[in-house]
Every structure is written in C-alpha cells, then in structure tokens.
Image (cartoon, rainbow, N blue to C red):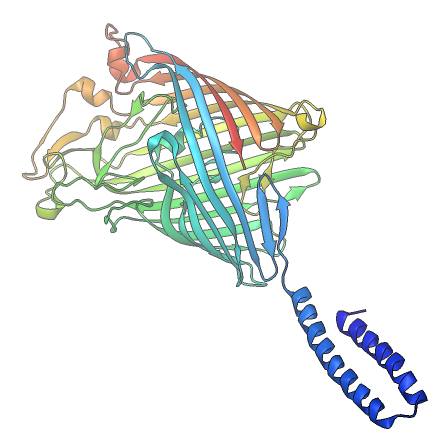
Length: 504
C-alpha cells in the first residue's frame, strides 16, 4: 500500500467516525461543517502523501567495496577513488672494470599514484591519475570515454598508452615482473595525448582500435608538430577452459621538427627533435646505466610493428611479444639551416641507410596455489588475479612463479658505419672505430620471479635476472684489455630486485 492510499484510507475512517454521532443527532449544519473539515483534511493529506512518494522515488546512492569504496547512483553516475604504492629495493652488479656510483644497492619509491574513475550520465566515463613518486608530479591515465548505447564502439580522448604493446598497456599492478620487457623501454613506448576509437564484434572476442596522438604526454611544451598514428588488433577466443590472446600493433611516429638548435622539452617523446635514440636499462629502474644504447642519430620518423600471443590454462600460462622498429634517417651530405638546424651545434651522426632494431620476450608461469592469471579479454590486457585463500580468511594467499627470456637487439651495421654529418655545410667525418662499434649492442636477459599475494590488493615481488651484453657503449670500459672488436666483447651483470605493492 502506498503512502497516498494509507493516508486517504485513514481520512475516510476518521470521517466516518466523526460523522456518525452527528447523523444520530440529526444536525444537518454540524454534519455539513464536519464534511467540509474532512474534505480540507483529505486535500492536505493527499499533498503530504505526494511529497512522501516523491522523496521515495529519488535516486539513492549505493556504495560497494572493490578495494576502495565505489559509489553508484541512478542515472549512470559512479565514482571510485584509486591509487597504488610501489616501493622497490635491489642491486645491479658492476661488470668487469666498470665502476659507477649508479650501480650496486639502491632503493626507490617507484610509483605513488592517486586518482579516481567512474561514469557520467550519457554513456560517458572518466579516469584521472597523478603520480607523486620521487618528489615529482606526473600524470598516468587521464581520459574521457564515450560508449554509445547499444553500439559496439568506444571513443577515448586524453592521455593514455598509444596502442603500443600488450604488456605496456597492462597496468603495472598486474604485470608479472617488476619491470616490463626491454623493448618497451628501448623503443619509448609510453602514454601520449590523443584520441582513439575502438570497435568489437558481438561475441566480444575480436577488437580493433585506432588512434592519433601528439608526440608527447601531458606537459607544458608547445612542440605540437610531432605526431603518432597507431592501431591495435586483438583476437581473444576461449576454447574450453583455455583463454587465448592473439594481437598485432602498428605505430608510425613522426618526430618533432628542429627549432633553430633549441632542444625540445617534451615529455615521453619518441625523439628529441629530429634526433632518435634507443636504449634500455638492464631490467631494473634502480640504475640509470644503459649497457645497450644506439646514441643519438639524425632521423625524421620511425615505424614499429608488434605481435602478441598468450594462452592461459587454468593456473598455468604462457605469453610473448615481439616488436620490429625501422627508422627513416637522414643521410650524409644533408643540409639543415635556420629553423631546421639540429641542436648540439648542427652536427649529428647519420647512418649509411635506415637502421632497424628488434626486441622480444617469452614468459611462462604458474600459480602454485591454484589461481588463474587475471585477464581482461575486452581490453586484451592482464588484470588482477582472484585470490582463493587470502590470509584474512586463514589461508596462505597466492604464490606465483615465472621465468622469462628477454632479448633486445640494437646492433645495426648501418649505424656503426655511419658518419658524423655537419648539417651547416653537408660535409661528414668518420668517428674513431671503437666509438662507432660501441653504438647499439645486444642484451639478453634470463629472469626468475616469485610473487606472493596475501590478499587481492597486496603483492610482494622478488626478481632475479642474469643479463648478458654484447657490444654497446660500455664494452670497452668493462673489458679494456681485450683484443676482440668492441662490438663482439661480451659480459654479464646480475640484477636482484624486490617490491612491496599496495593498490586500490
């Protein structure tokens, strides 16, 4: 019974009780007066009941706990705070004769992110993250989305990964190892400002996304003529209990123009003006030493083709990716003047032809406690595993072990045989042999990882890696007495790292 009906019934019963004695005394005047009062009372009660019904029909917010309070309300509103804290410690060994204060033991607050996400009426969504680690402020994902009702498309605008690699696009909370694979570091796969449109089929196992991005992330620069065009396709069928992932990516990255010798201040740009440089750390952000490094060379753009594959068999899984990068480089004899002049005195290395580089990894792992590796088939990325027996319920949590082979090849004869070009005159010179042979190098890593999840939102990680390097800019320093050509000298370093991770 609604409030209106209950109040009306009460009024009628009251009227009957009041009217009965009046009728018994046969007093028409009193009866009419009482009837008038009852009618007025009914109108007042009806008005009150209408207000009560209106209050009852107003949307009521509902709060659920999903690692943090998520508030939803009628009409399409939702809000959820989000964040993460990653604290790292570990060491990278000093190889051979190389001595550096930036090797050895170190600690680092890798990430401290705070943000929010949710939905807005009109099929809109939003996500905002800021990172406060290491006394600086940077941005993570900052985007708005539009998903039309009953339409298989999603439009996204803001700062996000430029459709570059399955592991790179996956949250750092959910990748297996403390650091992502080497080619993502070397090829500068990162978030940039842009817009993308994604389409999926009815069965939600085939997705295509294409986007156009500026050549940098959120920053204060006005270097807006560099741009990136990218697309990603992934097919995610499920066969029985096995989840498969097959994907491919393509990026064309047009570099920011030179500016009369001034150096661009853009963040996470794939180049510094028209100077390309590809390099990678030895699987740890606890050092800034790069054992493989092409050095800077003059280039106008690059292209990256990538392949992705993964299979999840209950608690066991395998995955791997590969990327090929090809640059569009300047040539010996080229001239650049005025606004086209290069930074650093208008002099830069130019290869004999367009150099190409390659990176790949393969990973295998299992959950000893029976969990399944988390996977988001719609986005084609790794997600958080669901812990079967968390310590909060008397269990041991979840234990994951994994092994990875990671290979990065930055070695190219076109670069090692390249000359130093004076872009003011077009004349070129040949650098010293050891300097040229030190451009690039290859890095092969063998990694083992152990992860413990006490509960869904807490993880402790330990990684050990053996990194083998051949050639590169430090080979002559590491092994100065060798008679082997610099680009053939090899050595190894050990990498040990641990992380405590909290997310919500």
